Amino acid sequence: MRELSVYYCDKCGYYAYYQLPKNAVCHKCKQSMILLSISHQEFTNLDYEARDRFIVTKMIAASPTLANRITAPEKLYHQRKLVGTLTQQIKEQEKEIKSLNETIEWMHAMIWDELRKKQALKEEVRRLKELAAPAQQD
Ligand SMILES: [Zn+2]
Image (tube, rainbow, N blue to C red):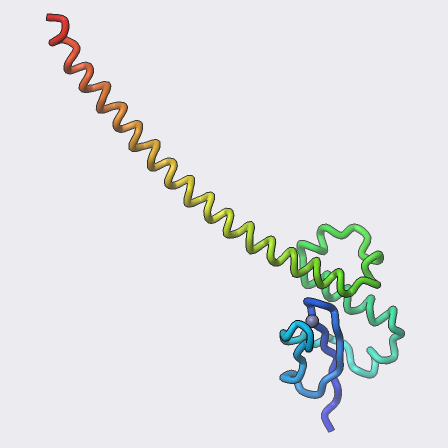
């Protein structure tokens, strides 16, 4: 018989044991779960608190932005679900920021283009005025 491995969901923090990776799908989030680098035996030897601690540490480590923001990770060790939500929110925000930055870049390019056109028109008007000026003095 194949040995059981420990898997966790990085979205909600749910963990479970499976023999085959293809079965490691979170029933709630419907997403593939991540294999933990601990044997099933070692993991089940841990008490529930230590298991939470282990998984939360993994979840935080997998989200560098979150890791940087958390000054007291031990406060989150009992909050597997919360950590999952936070890492997901950060992922979403990063995506949003990226698309906002792209929009801003695009707007800058457009504005500069418009400004250049306006500047060229101003130059044109100035030159035309200069050409017309001597004639008016007559
Ligand atoms: Zn899940």
